[in-house]
Image 1 (spheres, rainbow, N blue to C red):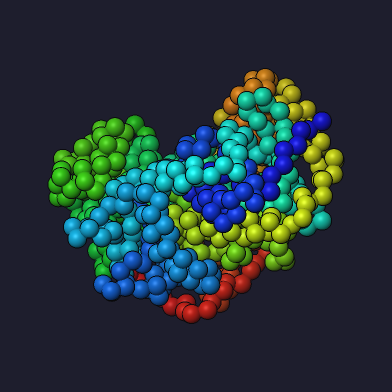
Image 2 (image 1 turned 30 degrees about the vertical axis):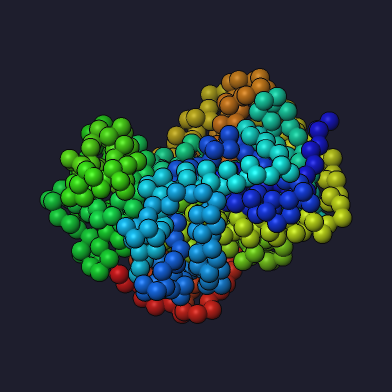
Length: 581
């Protein structure tokens, strides 16, 4: 019998979005709403601590910035696929979020006049990225965690692995989760749930993500019948260190860093003459791949990866230590290069899931017909409401986590407060079926020739090869065929460790299953979208096609693979125009 744990609101994920939601519920409702925070890692190990460069907000309209400029930059950056009502929500809420964090104790970097400092990020018409050195995500997480300590009406479930959402009759009923400490399955019942599980970046091998970012929240939603939106749009950050993929923040270019090819040329002047290295990430990444493809790149003999150079030497040691200390430390440790003395070897790297769980502007989870799945919200990178469209601007991601963490926390808390009781107990068939699938199926399955580690390695290779910065039909079909082969082979995967307690081998099997589902959705959506828009660049369809493709992709689960449908883009202020920088 599966043991049940009850809360008013359950938050899945303890990164920026999850913590901001928890803080908002505590601030607004204190002892009136009880919260459970479930995390597959120890809370401060959530991947949000890796965010480096900053958070976008309009702080200085007196100096020339404006909410409208931030909105325009974001819509243009999205290649006009962003829902403009969501964009206005983001930009209008953000200044207050920066000041709240300031009041809660974050150490924002300052200007000489004592005001909060801001730096340029790609695609911005004004330097509006607020930062704390180059460890912004870590300091934001620490600040929210510190604020949470002021309250008592929540419980943490660190190192619990959520395996399914239980949805019946179009309503949320609960979630199932494995407690890694005892290896048993539990049912969490609550009046509301906020999904804040982040992206699925480990579908790629060369990636800035930690190895825990395996798309669990997305895959569980997909298997539960919730559509995933715009998953073909995956962001590739221009500067991942060779050969590890560790991020060099866009703040490095915001502080004046330049990109060079092997001829010593600052090549971005050919591709984005007004913005140069501070063009949006999709444009810079394509420019870098073009330079390498045309023979102007370097090659790392050990990894076989081509790369270009990020030159920070002219910034000087003092500025590097003040503004970019982590970049310098990481470059020395993982590339053997001191950026004060040598350029850093970099190439575009998988960095952000622009798509996610289909949701409305309030963060409410929707079905394929646009109906709210009662009791369910989603926030942060797991969500697609859709604020980033086809290409996210740097420093809008942490902003999104803060804004929709607040919005969903407030909405879910209010909903729980008004609900007289928990939703009906889910059918025993659903919960017992999940327990049987996990423990009588996957865990007890006899170990064969296949391993999750080999499956994941091959998945990473095919995604890195065929579903990267540039794509075409032939490559995407090869990728889809390989992914489906891997899904078939996965049926013979079993953990070699059959124990229950802290069985990380078993967790890897579950994570790999999630990655395979996410990868299939990405590739099917990319195959069907016969245009180039934002991060989705097809060499066989090089032009943006607003007549046929100014719409969101929805992918809904079926046993035969994703079933695609489409959803209109919300255009409130700006009609699409040609995108130039």
